[in-house]
Length: 315
Image (tube, rainbow, N blue to C red; front, side, top):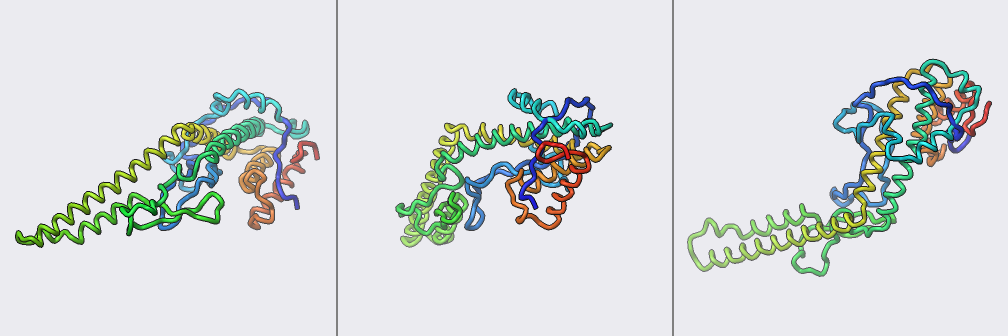
């Protein structure tokens, strides 16, 4: 059994256009690292920033990454226009396509071009992320040498190597510590005037001032991290990657919504499914679930019956 499925690299003849209405609930937004801390682990900066669109189950328009039509695929990406023109299918498959399958042939060409543009944008974003220090993402490192933070809860995040970790400090941990230390000496409010009451009040004021210093330190670190990100262009690169990813999802939705009239159309839909299942060929067949392996077998059968080949030739 082959370890990957390769989409045809030959290109599809120009297909007649057909006006279609996109389903606004077609696809969910792609996940992004947030750097938020949950107990002792947060998302590290080396996790993939572009994931495939999940199955369209209980999805809503409010979670779509963006709203694009097929025309948006090539907007602002001249290279994609030339790329789409180089994609063809075997003549036997093209001639066999009738009705909506001609539309599907055109959509597959657009999908392949959009995939390449999205991969290029994602590589650009990942290159920027890799060039930045890990401290630029998520919570700041715990100030071990500062006595002001003794007793504050530490959290551990996974490092880029996936095996080691580093200690960080969250604003939530600081605020919780501040409230606890202030509460321990807050009974002065209910006491009669006395030297002991004044002593407790002064301790409370001192702890309150220390708490404000801790919060101010954390916010200053956050501004430093944001300045690093702004100077690197990471936000613009991430938004561009998201935009291209949204285009891919929209085209995939149109392919799914367009009825197939012949085995050629069925093969096109199965090719898209195979690309999702194998993460565009990056996932080995041995790592797939049994149902996913059967789907790949269906791809090969559909291509064979349609006179198509994953290598770009005819059956």
